Length: 180
Length: 312
Image (cartoon, rainbow over all chains, first blue to last red; front, top):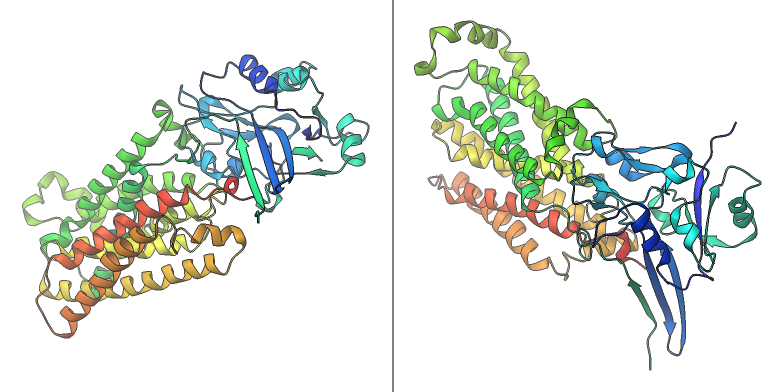
């Protein structure tokens, strides 16, 4: 059987920036007050009055060539099932090399000392469920699945829709896709 | 007439990394400075003895390995202070990750202690040559030459790693240059020579060291020029990273403290002292030390501000 490659797709034409995903993540993963594993970005560009805007929900890109995994001196940052990048809290020293190496600034130091970030809710995925953010999205902006399975919803969307990734020039090969 | 805009608004509130991405502070500055300095001490004192083919008799040179270990321990102390999960510090020694300069550094640091101790034992001052130390001293003296070469190699590894530690973190665009490796190594050799010049040495040792320091300072100026040329001739991201030194927020501190006070002035003073046979004054090495510390402090702080999130 082929190894899965878990990806998340964010439909920027549907996202209204309601932050339900942010709160669902905080609640599902007990993210401490004042911190978050995902957030909303609003981009506005153009020349007044011809302005364009894009709203997108964003988080760790679970890069296939993850700089954080390379920079980690203890192996705490590692690839798990489906290429998801996880932090083993017990192996983390809080040296912050991974934070410095992340082009997407997706990581933060948890008040308990270890470095924390989005896990694509792998604990839910292992049970056959979807990540918490995907389940609560009221506009069905978020899609999650296996890009190596040609019959999956995400594969179909990546074939039929135009998409982009954030800062491809980093060479990190991100797995968070933005449908445009 | 209106001009094009590109404005990014984010609702993220992570006080640990927003808005300035500041993760490493004075602890890492002090560690990088002392790490480089110690690398310089090991390289210079070993090369000195290999060149003369006999151990030095000056009290300054004899105390170098012990002094280096004390300074390195101080640096490792501040490094420890920076760890967010201090109880897990032992985890560095349960793994070796070849892709992580920090992992290389952790293991190199462990090698420095036995080598330093053996170098010290091999050339103890007469007052400390206690009978109980006779056996370890004999071992240290028998292996003196290989130990000296190991000391040079270890010093080069330590000095390079302090620069590559930052240089391999490509997400901080300003650090993302392998020139930082040789730059920090050269600065380490230069500050190591400066510290040695402040110790009680023989006159001929002083004469040689000031010359070596001048070569190191000139090399460092060249490497800094290469770094800036790399920014100026690079992609738009690299130009943004270099702009902080060319008119941006860090221009004044970088050019005054690092380039003028830390390199140009001591270079001119050292040249005068050597060419005109003037007596060496303590100010020259002190300025070199200030410059070395400023280089680490400024690159560490300014580099953290140059992330991809600041690019459109």
